[in-house]
Amino acid sequence: MRITLAQKNWRSDDLFRYYGIPLQETLFSSPQARRVVEKAFLTKGVRIVTACQYPAESMRPLGFMKLGSLGFGTFFVTYHNIANNCPLVLWWGDPRMPASHPFSQWYPLLPRRTNAQ
Image (cartoon, rainbow, N blue to C red; front, side, top):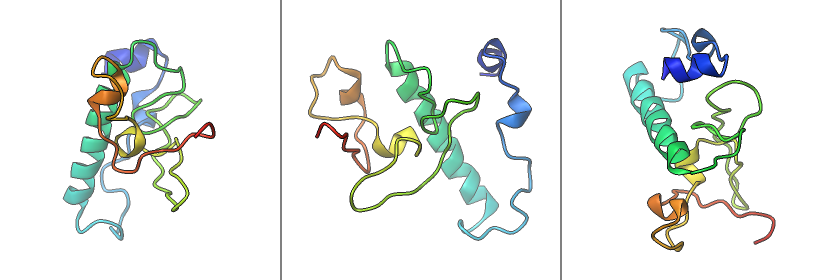
């Protein structure tokens, strides 16, 4: 993964949180629980991006982002929709698509509605 990042001139030290940050865990039950979730989001997000034959340049494992990173990684959802800068594992995919389509390879937890819909 670091080779791919270097090819895109992305500095890997800017991509990952330093160990021990945040100093006090408030969202997860433990730092280990945070790492499990973040690793799963990143690993499956990479799988999703690589399933696409021609992914958009801004499509990143942790959500859409123009800057050189793994994605924005926000988690903001309303009853209307989920943002495309949330991790891909949460919204990307459509099991109703034909089996040959990449969207059929993943079932989204919070399906995203596009403006066309």
